[in-house]
Image (cartoon, rainbow over all chains, first blue to last red; front, side, top):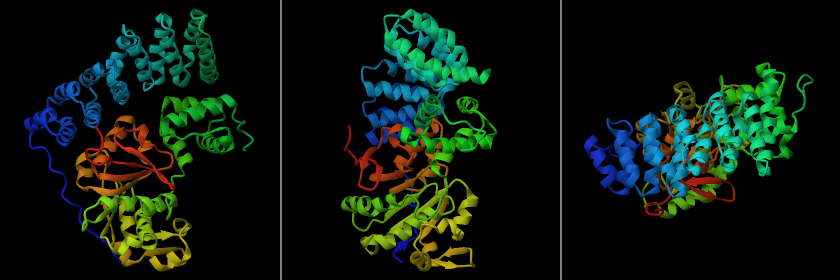
Length: 207
Length: 284
């Protein structure tokens, strides 16, 4: 039988110590930066080093590894390291940041009220998407607050879309108020109608 | 359809399909409504719910392990020989041909089945290669099966299987590669058992995955969909490291690496869609 049984080959060499790792994180080859980014999650000071590296990293693969390491740590500090990427001009960078933030829902929750009130419309839209990863009660509360004050129809549409998926029965009044505030935007009325149908499933359930 | 569960409404069907899509990437159209309803109804009966609304509320609350149970109902999480045979066809018709084109002579072909459960998949790979790959004698082939569960690994090493596990294996192959123990069970022949090695691994533990080295092809089916987003990202990067540049990973039919990580290239072959670690320098 030509198939063979072999022991596993040697594992790839690990970075020697923290200083090596942090130096490689910004000064190594693509492969070294990848390895250093993956190692940094478990090192003291790793979040700060990863945040600094994220600001300068140009290789998409290494950037992905940095973001994953930050999601492993999943602290408010790692959230703060990722947040600047939500404002990036590059769509891949914004999407990468969004995915990373959604992977650490507990850590991002305290930042969401500010994000949903951000001066930048795009940030508010992306923040609605982050809310999709929260527990339904938390998402419903945050997004209903947003619906009652938001003046941009596109932001409201993003929030309504999330509520249609995970919103609870308590979202119904805010959804109705929102539809009334945008009579010139038929798509808002349509989105609210769909969301209300979905949310009413929850209302029936509660009844 | 059981009398005590009403037919799913159009809105309920859309809600459920959206949930399944976001969670697994599986897409169900109206044509699949009966298939979807049958499986959801089974879950309603198993959990004691009498309305879809109550059941959806439980799913949305993410309580208990019901999401896992529902996904199980759609992925047929049962393992048997030659399961998803199209991927095995893809292995010999495309993936290995591609690998040996760029692989230095004398290096073994390494294939990883993870999680391997009780061994049906790695033994299937071995039998498939012996039967269907003309180059099988020209290369050293190293097949490794790994799982986090040490009990299933013990069973895999023992290589004893019942009728259900062998139902898709042609009788000729059963006779050739397994020996009967009694009327109900068969054991993988000694040579074949010795040609597959087994090990424990936790896919989110970097040190454990790294210790397995690099592979040409990884079969990682129906496990990533059960991880949360953070664990899925980590596992995907670990698996990326476990692939040779240009190596391939095969996921379950309900899974898509594109929804998990941007690290891999999508490769569409005649028999399967698989994911490839780009060659070094192939991407910016």
